Image (cartoon, rainbow, N blue to C red; front, side):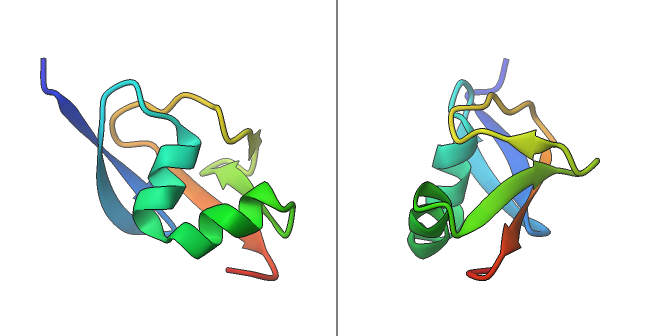
Length: 71
């Protein structure tokens, strides 16, 4: 089993360690986007438009998107 997985944040491929969650992917993508999500300025959705919490689990190949004013 690979130690890292690849997820996509706003279309950009990010490698994170298996077991990390949405907040870790956002931090790897852009710290200011994570801060905006934490402050409620943006929301995080999966590829089907479902809302994700910052503590949500991610699987290899997951696609997440930030929606809001700080995108």
